[in-house]
Image 1 (cartoon, rainbow, N blue to C red):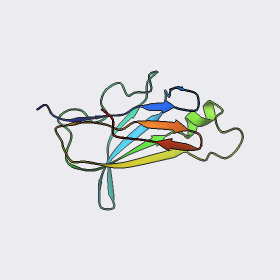
Image 2: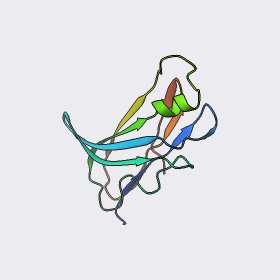
Image 3: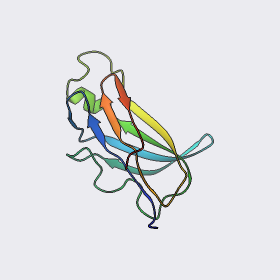
Image 4: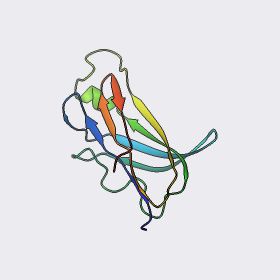
Length: 119
């Protein structure tokens, strides 16, 4: 089996389009310790140009993606003049199979979000 890797993308569900220009940081989590291991930005398709965690870098354990969505929400007028309800969105998840492809997308709206393990 090939070495595993991690991908992500962001869809703007309020507008029904991909969400470009969102900075994403990936951390490896161990207890109270967070170690940043990658950073990327979404392209015009709402995806990163390459896996955020490429083949050969996956290990079993806990990870956290942080999506910095506040500027995107402001730029597209999705929150009106109000204080942002969502700014930074953390998604913590576990990797049990370092040989698999994990896909953790973010479905974003100004007042809520969802995620799932995709393929």
